[in-house]
Length: 265
Image (cartoon, rainbow, N blue to C red; front, side):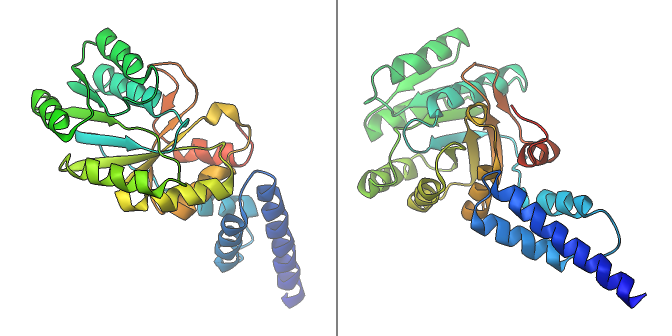
């Protein structure tokens, strides 16, 4: 009986190593793999298929923000992750699916076409819209939209290398008052840059994540890496450029299938 138990544990240990090797090929970084292995090793061997424990550990590791977006919501993040398109998608979903009154504001007045892009979406959906530069303009825009259920605020993309600009953005959005801050990150960004971006944006006290560009990769371990490093839940996943489509409320089972290569976007 003892030999049989030892054989079962050895087989399980070998299975854990194989799982960890597979995860490394699915873009899980060393930290995510180490945490996965530790959690699997802590589970008592009970004769069940290891895959049950893998799914259970992954499910416990995925944090999702299920709260409704209301009040003032600010989207921040580096350039090129799709913040403006994401703002339009969220606005459309809140309007059409939750029947909320939405206002749109952008501070991204520097990027060519950014104001026009969001204004076109606002006009199509008949939403109040303002492009603002100064704090006075922001105050006026917020007052103009005070009857809206949700006010979505798009911001200028700041690279993690530009700490000064990120801190300037922090001072600016602090004056927005009570708000929720979403950090938008692309799942195609390399691990080092993702970590640096998360650390650079921590002073903005972001409360949850939007992970974009799932359609531009076929491996999704980076999502777990982002979750592990940020210690924040996911609010949305985006899967393309189409508005109002190509945005998902995260679902643990779907994310696990993506992680394990059983599904792709």
